[in-house]
Image (cartoon, rainbow, N blue to C red; front, side, top):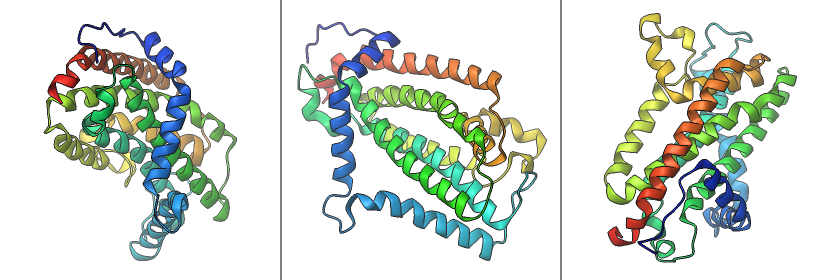
Length: 276
């Protein structure tokens, strides 16, 4: 890595880098997905069976054991609760997978840091691509469960890519920021795992926002996952259109986070090889 190189920090430069290295990104995503299941009997089929088994467990626990229903929303029912919960978990899972891995991303690819020509900025994109693959598998299982249990399949589901796009952008920005910071702050990974666990319980995954006392409800809304989880459920389960105003605001904030994360990554990358 050239310590005197000047790396561009604009969002346009980030898009250009991803586009120009798109073949490399696809290859790395495919290699990492295949590598996760290499040597196992079922291979990549585990990416399908694992979330399917989790959905079965949620359905059993919440419909048979806890006999829980979803407070304050349409379609209350025990099976519905498991589907509602699963829809929140797959959104959280994408975010947590990237954020938890980001602080050690550069540290686990030291061999690539030493290569002058390797575009390090695509590593968080590859990590996000793997998480998107897992998200798509989870969504396919969710769609199958909706049809299997005889629930309504709404046309508003077509809005799902628009709803998820701001979260993907924010996750990428945070991943870039944490990947850069993790090179210099080795304890960051431990802190991030704790934070993402807290975010899980401060997001409406296991409960409805209407079940939270109004005086502390603002804490849940401060969680960046809350809005997207609610919007995903709105378009998939409740059959509503997205909240375009707040989705636009969220998208603007995501662009800012992506730019800040990329800028920090580019400003600090010259010192990666020295630290490592």
